[in-house]
Image (cartoon, rainbow, N blue to C red; front, top):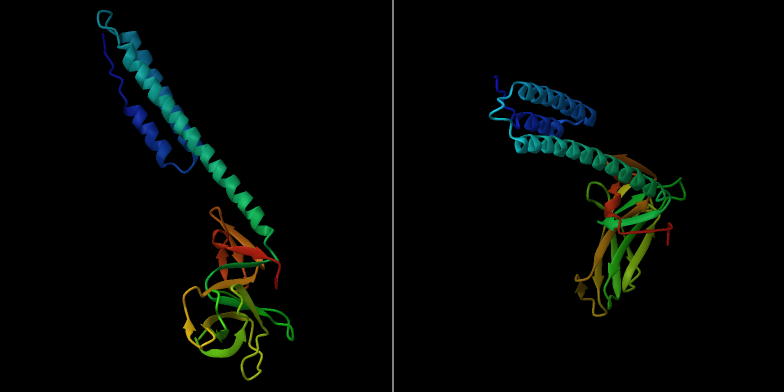
Length: 235
């Protein structure tokens, strides 16, 4: 009698198809083909097996179980893709609610925007207790200082609203500006520890790619995961 030796080669091929394919349907189709090949081999072997040395049923059971495991893995991968997609949609939906809100993240940028005569940019910073003077310096995209003013000195969060006019009173164009804070105590001694700045702006739109939602602030793109606070503009 002819003896056909079935082995785990078909299982390994199916696993490779499921692991390497980006398309679950293609992986499932490949696995189904492997199932058919396996069943043909099994039928042929059973028809031609030596009655005095029948096929080891434990081996057949293990091979069938292996194929089932591959099928389960493909299904799990497909379910994970669906969950990731649903999560991305949910995150994008949440991000849309940020439009029109002022958000803050780590950084030192403010976005000047608005109609002529009513342009504004917000600069947010945090101070420790004991600050008597906080000097705010604003810089353009070339790093040139264009404006300087004294800000509030509250312990904690502070915000200064800039009209966009430079020291000479000239209106600056819309865009992204950076700023620095120089803090000092009542003895005019510089304070650096505990002084931090934030990038802030009004969310104009939202974009999403590969499940990641990004807030567009009018020149600054901020991943939603980096948002530290959200509030009504000017608050």
